[in-house]
Image 1 (cartoon, helix red, strand yellow):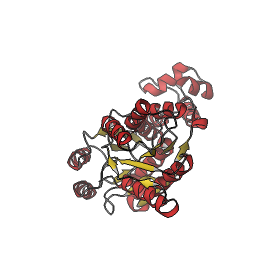
Image 2: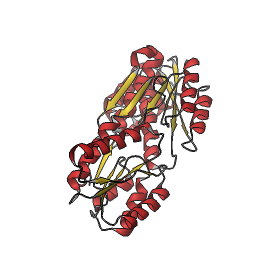
Image 3: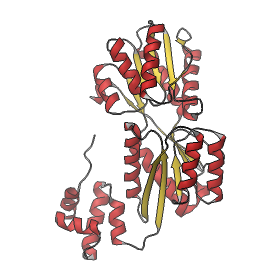
Image 4: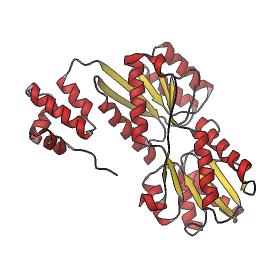
Length: 344
């Protein structure tokens, strides 16, 4: 992973002292306009995450835009990384005084998500969320539109016809990709299992459909078992995987289509040898990176978080500054495939 540029890097690029960069960032000590501009341009060139903050300090009259984000599972490393990338993307938006407001839903319940959406709409100008596809959430998104607060779906689509845009992976293709990976990495045809977070996650439904359609079309010799729901929790996935391995000792592969993969990894560590059961997951986190290295994860189909957050925030900014109708639709990004030999 590339090192994030620092204040020291800005100073070297701009040809000024670290103290000067700190004065620009603080905004409470006057600096010459030429010096401030040199610091701002240097920060932009090296990709400093606080470029927008520097711009705000130099131009306090910039229009203020508040970006709201509603995410899931605050304690999961994936959502922590997502929140961090979103904060960085907001700070990089040029020409505005941007602020990111991040809230984590206490559960996957449509009521919880809808309540946060409605409350947040009083404090921000535009919202992006990860949420289940449910009429209660749809009603909240419709209410936000009536308040002129555009809503974006992230990673898993919801409120189609009400939300402004979906930004994420083409989940049907991701499911088929996971199926192809399992079919080529298992030693022989056999039983396969798939976990989804819940039956209201649109992205998981599409991944499951793609996964099953691949085997129906190309490899009917594989037996895809009934879908398991794990609510994207580690403990539930762990217990369900142990039960799965007990009831189906001949299982050859598992696909975790959403969160909770840590539980599948820990169960396989308890009961099986490395590479005994092929496991495909969707998020590259510290847990999955280690499991890739030691043979308990076969491959990771990950969303490119930096690019996803950058594109999402750009579209959100366009909806406020450049007009919403221009960005209605879907924005698909290509997944990044991580395998052991390229991820160690």
